[in-house]
Each structure stands twice: as C-alpha cells, then as structure tokens.
Length: 160
Image (cartoon, rainbow, N blue to C red; front, side, top):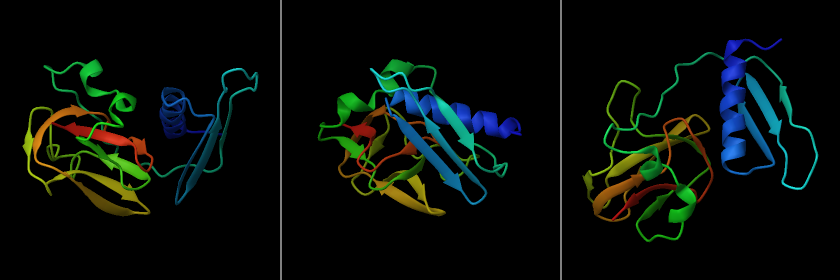
C-alpha cells in the first residue's frame, strides 16, 4: 500500500512524463523504484504505475518564480536547445538551483555571470556536480525548477 510520499513522487513523475511527451519514466533511489508508462500518441495503452518500494522521506526543494517573472518567460526548454547561450546538462540527474534549500539560488533571471561561475548543481549517484557558465553575460531564462530530473543535453538556462 502506497503512503502519502508515494503519491507525491508519482504525481511529479507523471507530470514530467506528460510535460516531456515521454512514453516511459523510471525513478530509483536506495529504497524506492518507480516505473511509469504513459500513453503514446496514437496508442490506446493504459497508464500503469508500479511503485516497487516505499521511498525514504527527504526534504524537498521547491522552485520559486520571482514575482516579476511569468512562468511563460521561465519554462520552455525546447525552444532554446540550439541557442548558443543555452547552458545544457552535462549529465543525467536531478538539478538544484541552490547549494542548499535554505540558501538563495546560484543565479536568477537578470543576474550577471562570468564564464566559469557555478549556475546550478546536478545530483547523480549521490554526487553533486557543479554546472558552470560557459560564457559571460546575463541570465535571461531559467528553464528548470529545483528538483527536476534532467537528461544529458537538456537545456537548463540561457545566458545572453
């Protein structure tokens, strides 16, 4: 029987599945494995969710959009994938925009950055990997939220 945290994780994973038009998504940590299969356009396959174990309850970070920035201005990664100013994920993992849930984000929309500045972290296999700005400029878009799973090459933010 699933507990309350199972439902939250499954809900977030289902949102990622739908948002990215994926047919299948799998999440695993040391005590939990969840596999979600969704509908593929043109197919009539049912959605199935199969939690394998009860997850460990851990504090979650939430992405906060500044009041002066609309969600439309912040989250649309596909349209920036070929932009030279786009910072892309170097690995598969979970992105974090701040070093700690109690600390401010590394960067925000409108912030100036220098080449080599840390702009976010990606957790992979219990290791936090810094993602650095590949050029100097101003952050114009943030395309992910803290806690989002990201793929290799996925657009994270844009520096103009």
